[in-house]
Length: 566
Ligand SMILES: Cc1cc2nc3c(=O)[nH]c(=O)nc-3n(C[C@H](O)[C@H](O)[C@H](O)COP(=O)(O)OP(=O)(O)OC[C@H]3O[C@@H](n4cnc5c(N)ncnc54)[C@H](O)[C@@H]3O)c2cc1C
Image 1 (tube, rainbow, N blue to C red):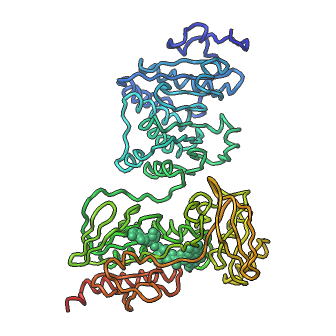
Image 2: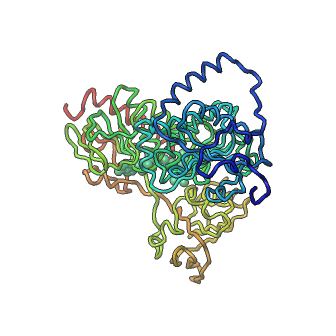
Image 3: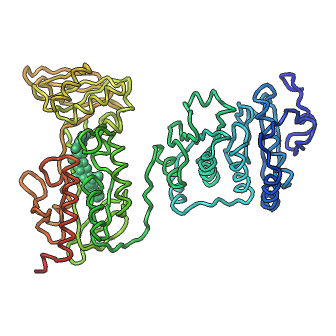
């Protein structure tokens, strides 16, 4: 008899640690047979299963927690599945406890049924019954644990190695979902390969409807890592691992390449719209190309909340447009992300040194774009990343329900202020002139949204302790100063071209600071070209893409008939 007056005949008949025979009279709940029962196919499947399970070399200990008052059919089905596999191998042991037992407290089991796998070593738990489609996953888990082998691709293994802080994965599944096993197997692999970092809960939404509701898991499989929704649907192994690593939804997987030296026709520096388009055009012209990007692919679009002026796409989030462009580019060109081009040595071949390798190439396209300007006020650098931000799309959600100022008066500042307001941030725009420079429709939206604007105002200092707490402002007309309590300062005061690399190799720069080029995007150095925002002019996605295409076509023509050799 336990504290709650319920006698579990299985437990009372066995000491903790003993193997329980699930055919014992304790297994009283009814198991519901499937509607359609194909006896022959079932026998065949059982035979094959027995063949692999009986050879399992390692012990697997299962602990099952149940409560007679909760989920009776799920408890019974779990016992039945375990009974079947235990008939096939002596390597699987099972302990079953009532949820009120102290073991349930020790292992923090609260749902019935909860099944733990080798809990002394792994943190893998199944909330629900491994039936229907999920029986496959259950068997897969036993095979991985029993044979001590996880079959994982090289790329996925490399990603999982990079996980260096805890990841708590939850995969919501249902027994009738044919896509769920793939996702659960991905998660099992992560939890088995990296037990010190990765824990896994497989949650059957039918057995756990409240939990499913809490996480709005209305479709399965749905995967959360550290409470962030990282995937809807089943993913290829590498994509799953990179979603778990980055704690973000990932749609595109870019394989890692370890080669220390790569020979190619064209190295494109920068994976913004200019660089990605150039990659497509170069490869389609028959050139081998490689795009090298040091940060996020998509360049400035990656941090653009909404794009409404790219032909054919009436409205899309910046990230959506980036995904479209990157997956299109990947159909043609190789992409090396997370690598910075550090040095370019002109010559024949041109040698490009990145933070990870060297390229020998016949041409280089500088599509390095532009980067945000700094305000240059006291406290800006000190609090950068601690309340001072240049990207509302990236950092805005951290300020929901808090007070911030947005500094600037152009399209970017207004768009970003609207974006902040939209996600519940209390935002005030600070602009040093008496009128905004942003487009009319954006200014109208700003007024409709009631976002306050402090005109003729400049920020003098950002102060705080661990993070930003105040800004000192000055009214440029009256010279009156005042301090304002804020939690964050967002800065959007324009962009400047990224020309350091170009300068280093002697590329001519215009007096406005952009790369000097001819109509074929040729610079003064043979084999070195430019495209996009780094050239100045209209700085738009469509113009950057157009310049990338033009440059790639000019490079193709020049490599066939090098003008520098004539
Ligand atoms: C907030 C915001 C909103 C915008 N909204 C719109 C809009 O609605 N519509 C529109 O048409 N345009 C918009 N733009 C402008 C548009 O995004 C740019 O004109 C366009 O992205 C320029 O493309 P690019 O490829 O020339 O350069 P970028 O997009 O700047 O890409 C350059 C890339 O090169 C990389 N890079 C630089 N140096 C190196 C190196 N040494 N090694 C490796 N990589 C390097 C950078 O990391 C960057 O990813 C917006 C810009 C911003 C900032």
